[in-house]
Length: 496
Image (cartoon, rainbow, N blue to C red; front, side, top):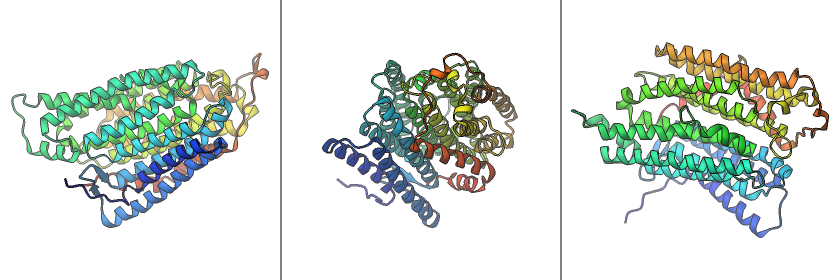
């Protein structure tokens, strides 16, 4: 048996996180209980170490070129590195945001932080996968960790319910995805993503001989559409986002979306570029449905976590607009816009849900819009940070959200997809009502009876660091976006 050679430096970020997770669990089992913040700081150190290695690999790829390693199963390119940096950054921020939440809810710490790392490892495998089987393994590693995390608050029936719903529907989506992979293998004779692209570029199908291939592409899109939570495959999102522990929701909305969209982009643009005329109309429809359904349904919600769940569906629609633009021949703006949006939205959603974590108070059940009433008087700095995040999600100028939305709409317009660009802009205006409702509740709503009896909102040091970092990133990118735009353009290329 001949074993493949392994580029140990290229997989060093994965090894660092894997070893850190194992040390975390062993140390927690063999020593006395640690302060919960120590686990968060440990995860943050692992994330920083991974980012440092990834930055070195970014420079190495720029000098020596990208490559496909371990028997053509993993792609090491700028696309992968930017995704890995985003995943590691989200891991560190969410870990810090979780520390006080676990203390407040009197939950154990080690397992949650180990599951965060496990999910991040699955996400990293997904974004780098150059083989459908490897991609599926990464997807299941990410998904199973998220199922358990969603149900990790054992004293809340809502958490148990969200984990069960996510598990059942996620299992169906995985089955669709796996069946689609099987049909693609039957049509092309390979599961290698680059190999599928090469085979399809040399084959000509006549008289309906591509029925199996088209069925595989359709099932593949259904599975991926569920994972990125676009309409009409979004029904799990509001219930799971509302019921899961709030820091877990932040992790799900950032790392989960980043990994799934990165995998979708790699599959569609590398394995299926010759079938663009088949999948691009589907992406167009999914994008339109997502921005409309997400924006309209978000406005009528009364629970902030459900509002943000539907908002995430709308944002997923914007990202799909970028993928649709990337499917046009000669396009150079679509994929950079997708990467830019993913990185910006990951930071935005972590900052937003960190504030929600604090406002929900003990029990994690006070997520109705009334819980934000008077926050501007009680915690003006916290309310100001939340206002920045909401304005960014609405796409206001001088925030990172404006840069993200402007990028995908520009990409659509440059490819003459004017209809979808107009629909997206109108939906963005509708969604702004949602963010204004929350801001009005924070700053302008009158006090009601019982407000004085509510638990005061605490802002612990670890959550404060996350909120400050996310706010600074949002404003800096909004005013000086050039460096991140350049990074996204550099990353818009694949190995091979």
